[in-house]
Image 1 (cartoon, rainbow, N blue to C red):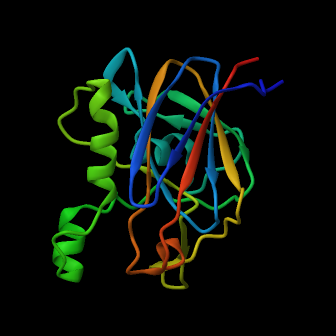
Image 2: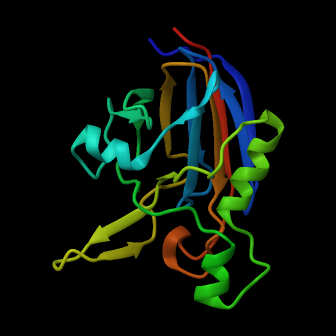
Length: 203
């Protein structure tokens, strides 16, 4: 039975990121407050910063490009660090990298636009994580559709206000989430809004 006591609650403002520790056995709920907002997510083993959730290893370990309840979030050491136990949306992405400075500079001619890469690094800084390259994210609520020729078409998220995913930590982890900053494409329904994190007690 999932513990229902909220131990920590963090609001992630639009265009920003936040990070939390989720102890082994506890749960993390990522809530789309207003709907159609993507959350870029990275996750590190708290006791071994060299181990992190890795989308490319997830695709291999799951033999799938979709996520469903019961799936593990596999690491670069090919073991799950968390498990997805509840999902009210059913459509997410783990192909696309986090938007970054170069995404807006090269594709839109902007140099001052907020981006998820910097948001995640800023959120993780107080935890003194050691990594050379920020891992690619899982993009919760992102709605990518493959067309008949196998090309990606980005459409607005299917998430509604209050929709969420709930994850259980299998080891102590540090998690960072960015309210995706993309307002120049339909990634977030053309509007960036807040997300909320809740850390819940274990069984």
